[in-house]
Length: 382
Image (cartoon, rainbow, N blue to C red; front, side, top):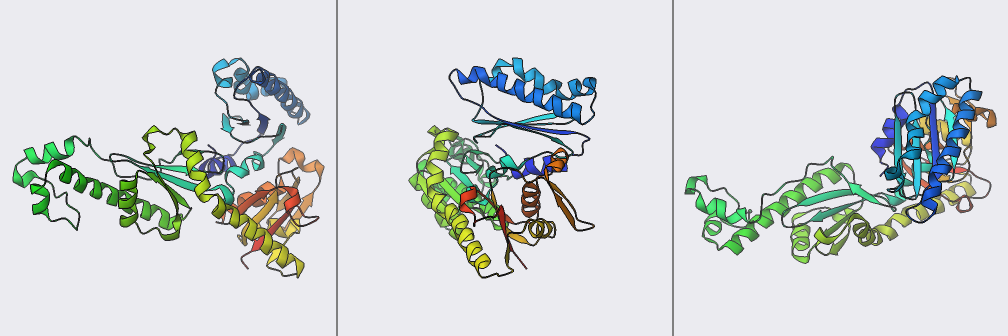
């Protein structure tokens, strides 16, 4: 999965030559055997562009060698998604297998070209999924396309359910832990039967999970979908204070679900809410532009400038061809044209990156959804 962390790493990479390759891949069928041939052709295109930029044949061979080795890696091609992105520089070759129908493209320049992957980070696709069972809680970062486990948050861990009762009751009274919640007196816990004791421990565990999730989402309030059985779901909702952040609940034991099934159950719970953000932003953009309100702009120079200044709250941009150019923030001069393709600066991509890094929202949409004769619209903070 392509995440904000991946984006930050790619744009912070310092290299003399950056090669970005995008292609469609296949999960099964005879097309899988054609994918290495497609990559071979794209690598040939990269060789030509590198040679045109003055690279020696030996340097080109060394730069592309890791990607070239993939052509004969059968295991690599048998475990693909629907899109493959390769980012190559003199230090490393990084691959991302993404569920996007990527168009074939090779970009060689001083920076990586990342706009084809921006739909993975678009605001109308970002949400989280929390699964909770009697002995485990797992948080996933999700987009409209897929989800992947988020290991950046430390969720409570629980020892074996079977040990919950036996270990404390076999200990001396002074060694027995205080396992009751604030609503369950200690005396009652120590005198309870194993089922009652386990319920008390479950309540405590779920409350700890709810507290950890509350702390996490107070700083990053993406919509959250809870997946748990009916009992645990009820306990979690009673213990949590997420409000509108909790976008939906799927009452099912998640143990039997793989990530594909989990995504299939969770995304419908947030789709309407996520879509409403994009639709609302488009409506707002059309109204502001229609009456000439300076709170919105569709002029490329103004969009790029405002994004660098952190003034873009929401950016709407199309998913079509790049707009090549260069913006010098010190002189405030913007230049555009095909001659800038060799620099690898797609102005829409740069504006999107700056918007995201300054805490703004990005929506990647089709060209026909934007107001007529515009490549992008920025809604400004001020």
